[in-house]
Length: 286
Image (cartoon, rainbow, N blue to C red; front, side, top):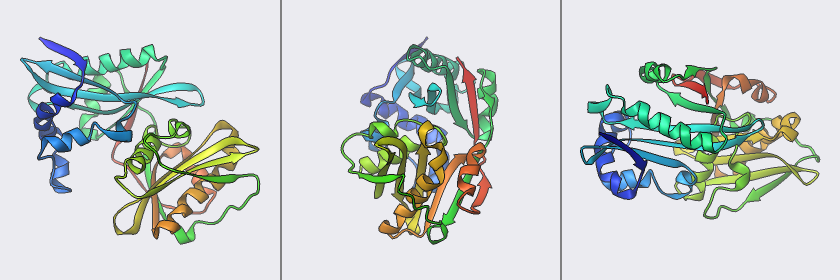
């Protein structure tokens, strides 16, 4: 019998074995998951703050987990499933469905009307099986920071936010940015996992945009810029100032991941090098 319950740090011992089977691609990068402490790190700090965490337990051991949260956007709230990991020996069972439905029920109680997830092509059949379908596509874009044009305007004031212990409330939403990405990047900066800058943009004392810029390897950066409904006409200024914040960190290249449908905001700043992501955004109405 499968039991779905809230996750706890004691579950990370079982989840190490799950991760070693489901996240094999990390072995080609940072050596993969080899210790329980690495798994615990995935469930700590500002990056993990406000995420829901459910695990599936069978025969006395944890065989899967789902991590998710509700996020504000101009139309209300959307749900974001960050990851769904099932022990490879149980992937033909209904455990993934049980976890997905349990997460949806939690989000439904938070008045979430639509849930989004990101899946590699190999897992797309699963998401179709549980009622999620592809919507749009994802672009990875980048540009030399020196080639990002300035967009000076007195209408927009830039405020640098000092990282504290939590992700600023202003950065817990998505509009033109990819759902969940702003919180991920902001959280990694707050946790001290990477060097970075957090920015808020105001006009007439009202928030019109936010930006998070993190410094990666070889002076290449990951940044996320977003605007409120009030700031849609100011998106080029918000994107420009966020990208160029990397100069203070001695970064050379700024890169980001965006919904393809939002590319027009970036093209206001000229051409970007872009490539389609192999990952697929999927969504389901609750």
